[in-house]
Length: 318
Image (cartoon, rainbow, N blue to C red; front, side, top):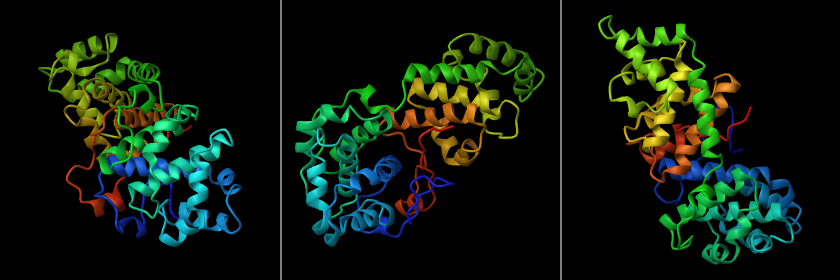
């Protein structure tokens, strides 16, 4: 059975490697989210399938990563399209069917429906879904625009692409950073030599008392020591400094790719943080993915490596 968001949040499937667009991390992430939506909504949607259709739907969603074969399409495609065009009949199955059809199209599956028509006629109804579902569908339609002829012709409003409210998220990240005790702040600045530790300490204090955006306080002080602490999971300032790096990435579109590098190297560490820290940090990483169409951890990895080893960003949960 395929893993949607399993213990290690890795996606592995032989089926994914067959006849699909060239894989990138953003596409992999969108596919993972679409599969999560389809898996979560499977129960309701399956009730609207024809006789025998529930078993086919289960196979497509859980065994084939939401990619239909021709035989699957013959069995359930017409019913999926009907559900994806009937929000007033049942909103949940409407959203689930749409997610499944988008995932199938992104993977060059057997579906041939014109999703641009769905977008044109039903775009406002997608906004009625819970924020993770709404953001996933918006992201999916935008990826379709890049890979196929279907998809939205006009840009989607940025706030509709986001799972989490940006202001609330940044507030939580600033709190994590500012909760570092004076002793922890001293330990962070100890990464510098004795000649500059004091300068780093004053700069760190100014940053934490101000916007918490590192790039607003120069390229070196306190960025050098914050970067080092954020790369050491055993350091007492690891979580607070990761929050600072993430806040800067949100503000600057991760211009230095600091957070992309950290997700690539330390995703498993982030997923093991205590909940009160893990949830805002994971939500912040997801926010980067949703904000910036080209945010790209795992740069230089082959499509095969991405499918086998890349860690997708889960929805943040306690």
